[in-house]
Figure 1 (cartoon, rainbow over the protein chains, first blue to last red):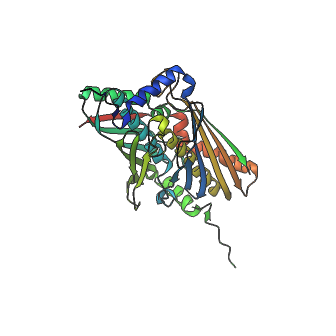
Figure 2 (tube, rainbow over the protein chains, first blue to last red):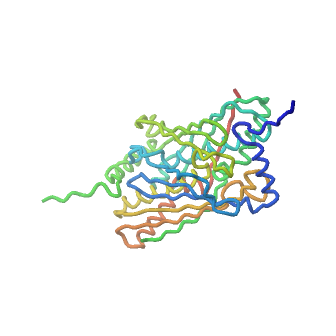
Figure 3 (cartoon, chains in turn red, yellow):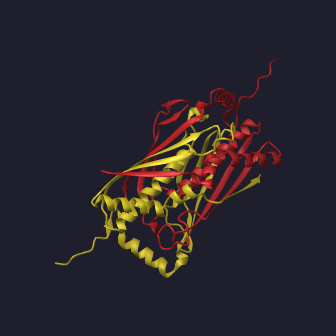
Length: 189
Length: 189
């Protein structure tokens, strides 16, 4: 009887994961990515992004079979008609999704089987900032709080290490906590 | 013959907009908002947020008739199965949506009719950071570039002022460029 090493853990193919890491170690230019979104205004607070193509591993990645369509909106109190989550709520989702994916991949790499990962995110905002009524308030959230509920087959200490490491390596956590330089250009047509 | 002031511009009810601003000026506590997202891991890079309730104007806002469901994922090269845009792409969408909504509301308040607002966002990332292979690279985008195409009934200079003001007042632009304090707690169940 032969023993086969487990390759898929938490839905992550760890063989592929370690293979990807080895490939990038051998050829670091494979790590250069560009992600994109295209947005079109529809009316009022309703606008829509389409997302599909991106650049990765020294070429355009055309593997996605379809584009993703995301509708944004505002609730009535912010003059919209609920055509989608609002932009600040999308940011909370981006943060939740990135911390969760980082946590799941790191757990997979460290041999931890997860059975449950749930999170609740809350962001506090005084809209006097964004509405231009007061310079005493910033436009965005003053603070975001993330609460995770996690279950897995490892001791609590090991699960906590995974949560710590996820914060240390999450792309969106980095961007939301540290900020990113953004340039904006506009062409009037 | 009476002349009626236009009240809806760019799909924004400007009467309601100015009424909201006046209400908050009279009672600033109305401006305290809390937005939320709840996320659940499904498998691998697939996780899902639900968004519905929020706090606004001194009470829980229950006006939304349904919850929004957002699925995140990763493409094959990042070990996913394209169950949704990835978290960094969601951040680009949040930024595009917020800049666009700010721009449309500000134009409405200033009497500018817009006929087209489109944007393309690009974020550059070296995944050696997020993959934990090198501390020379940050985890998130090194830089985000936003290109707008805008058409409206105002002179180019006035349209440029609207774009400037949108950057100055957008909640997500503030958060992405300046960062937000984030606290993370985890309960192991």
